[in-house]
Length: 125
Image 1 (cartoon, rainbow, N blue to C red):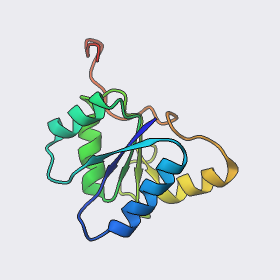
Image 2: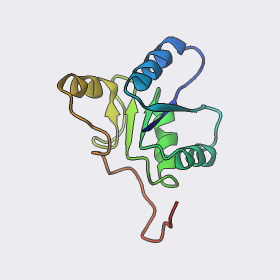
Image 3: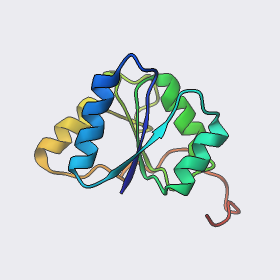
Image 4: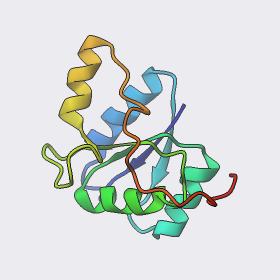
């Protein structure tokens, strides 16, 4: 599995390093989504890496990932590091929810299928 990490800036390296270590510990690979990338560039990385799960540090990064999900249909789950994401329920997961689910061993990846998608003619990857 490949997990994308979209963070705000270099001011939060400890938190990003902690999530990166957790992802690697589970046998997944991390792919960075830098804040300076456009939606199209982020979508290219997500699509090319076949990312299904992305972790975002802020609501702005979540919004970028949601926009990129239209062009990268493999992205099914977005987790926000902010304690209370400001989006419609069900679109993204809060990190606290993932931590809670992790203590019970359940997998949340792929359970959220309501990110924006293209219509029926979206084409193959």
